[in-house]
Length: 413
Image (cartoon, rainbow, N blue to C red; front, side):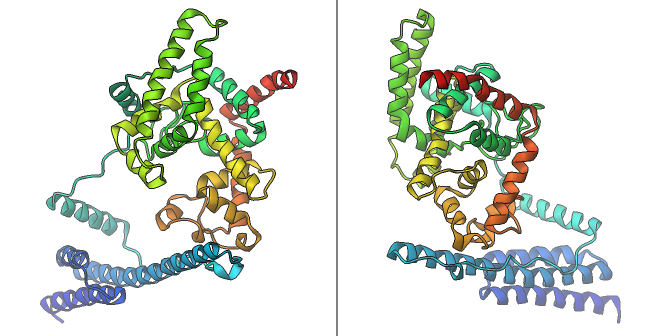
């Protein structure tokens, strides 16, 4: 067979692979056509041997993607059935969950060199189409700048040890134990976190780039912050007002508290200007006004109050559901999966179900601790990770803070 025949044969095979992919999906979309054109253009420049490998890879990936999509559709269908059952007050059983894990790709792989060239080709192709690169996630600098710009607010940032002491006092006043709080901290921040830690940034080295807006010991997102402020802001304002009127504080401290009260009142008004629904808070979180409010997590007065009431809300929800005492891992499960979903995962019917039943597809693959586990196995993994991180410096300091304020709590009773 001549080189020309080989080239023509390979081109037909490549088109067949792409058409097969479209057929498996049941629709030939504009995006599929774009992928096909891009693949063919790349393949034409390959020598026959590499082109054959590339075609085999595309074909195998098409089959895998079809199976994977079918699996995740079944997960979505089961979730909808459970939602309907809950609405009708019907019991949920183990049969209401997908019982298998997602399919794993086991087909041919591109060589490292070919995979690199294919990735570079796709990147250049995106540039030619004027696709904008993803915007970097905001970090501390943005939160502080937006707080200043939108609310003329600058959080009072205090030494790390003092922040932990205030956090511990607040947690114990809400009935949370040191073990619960420190274990959540150990998981969320690797036992190293600082009050200004942003997800993706190493808390000590300050290296890395933000991968989300999660901040602080409990790693609250912007939407968490505005949601909790709407629910608890009036209590925070009352406390600030009471502190500003407390003559045991020096005049400068009292003036600062009164000003903080004024700024927080403006933030609360902004947070209440949107519907009190999670999707509305998520949308608000993308704005400068929303991100500016997020800076209250850094404040030495408001930050501990805000993050503790978030954890306490999980405790209250579990108690209403009949779970009187949560472990640190169970609190973290509610934090990780969402409060209602976390509680569902603790129920006997769900404990042997794969975690795919409880996480969106992207979140499942993004969270390495979640993958290839049942609900019960995820709880064990969370506990194990917590045990490992409790030996790190921040977790040790946090546990010491709880021990230090314990006598204060006893004498206050």
